[in-house]
Amino acid sequence: MSQENVKIVRRTYEAFAAGDSSAIRESADPGLVTTRYEPDMTTWHGFEGFLHATADWTSDFDEFSITADDLIDADDRVIARVHQRARGRSSGAVVEADFWFVHTLAKGKVTRLDMFATKEQALKAVGLAE
Image 1 (cartoon, helix red, strand yellow):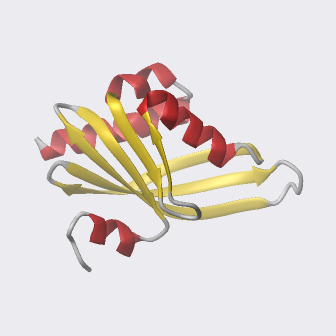
Image 2: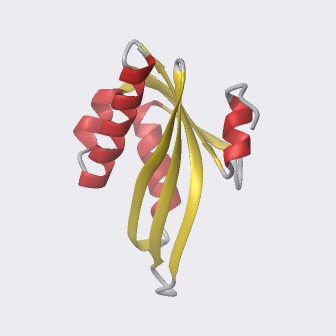
């Protein structure tokens, strides 16, 4: 089942890159909980909460893209290194950074999305230490 979870997460990032919110919604459990640990430890609920979290994170950018690499199978969770590339709306400055997202899945749906600044934080969250 865990390799299936990796495929679900990969498809979700492909849908995000394509702007296909219907496909993203299809992979999300209605009770989805999204938590961004840094900079402000904020939590959103449901798919609409996920959309709000995304809008909150990207609102200062004219261009924004993410790619997910290094998907790590962790049983009912999948850890993804997420590379962000964006251009500041006001400054025009290009910003690139890597973040680590932990997706918890049940019955083929993402039930939690936890966003971390470092790989170490993500691994610790799932009980794996490097």
